[in-house]
Amino acid sequence: MRVDLTGAPATMLATLYARALDARAARPLLGDTAAVEVVGRIEYDFRRTGIDERTAAGVALRARLLDDWTAEFLARTGEATVLHLACGLDTRAQRTAFGPGVRWVDVDLPEVVALRERLLAPPPGDYRLVAASVTEEAWSAEVPADRPVVAVFEGLSMYLTEDEARGLVRRVTGRFGSGELLFDVYGSLGIRLQKLVPAVRRAGATLHWGLDDPAVVESWHPGLRCVDALRSVEMPGVDRLPPGARLPLRVMARLPGIRDVGRMMRYRF
Image 1 (cartoon, one colour):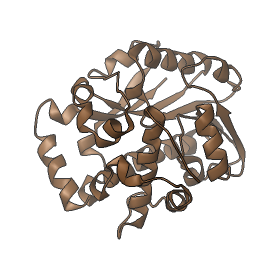
Image 2 (spheres, helix red, strand yellow):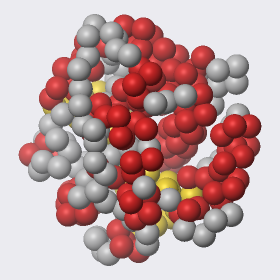
Image 3 (cartoon, helix red, strand yellow):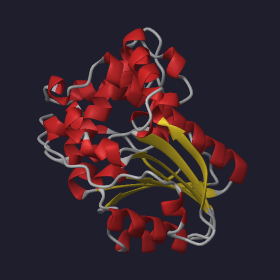
Image 4 (spheres, helix red, strand yellow):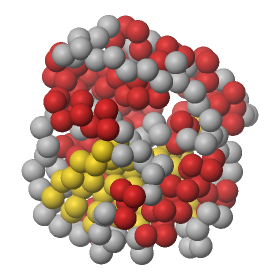
């Protein structure tokens, strides 16, 4: 199947390829074997993404942490709604194996949803795939607000403007009574250095919003509080990265400013 994407949507091919490379590794960090199958069905030169074994391991670690946080939330709440925003070709719903008390909603742009429907079978259970921009308001009004919610958005926040990010956070926290927001974010330095990220540069995408102070997001909704702000260079499992990836992260972790280039965020409300 031939795929032609540009800009931010094209970066989902980079993360897909990263998960596939990790799954093929001798010691996978995520083990997303479905990604290997999907990559094999797509006619695309994945070398264009700039992803290699080192960067793939970092992507896998990020995905695994968000998977773990999502699973923790569902284990604690029992009945809940999962909003998987800008889902791309991610198999998080399949990896999580959510139970009967969970409503899972994957959301992405219409062209991405059309591609996803051709490449990925929906998981069993209460699952919905919504074709819309996450920055639009209409789609969220169609999701019942009868349960706690966990909104997961991986590789999305940096492509939004601050106004769009604020609007998204307020829309989720304003509609649902309680829940968590799980996402990765760049610091302002990361935004300035975006041309050094091959997947971004080669896709022709542009990063906009960076977060340096977690309290900024807390101010967007009463009762919203940051419970985790892990530096990307210090994520659990970093010690399992290949040596070629582990050493640069150790150096970055010692450099003020550089060590805050990216974070994994968990907010609760």
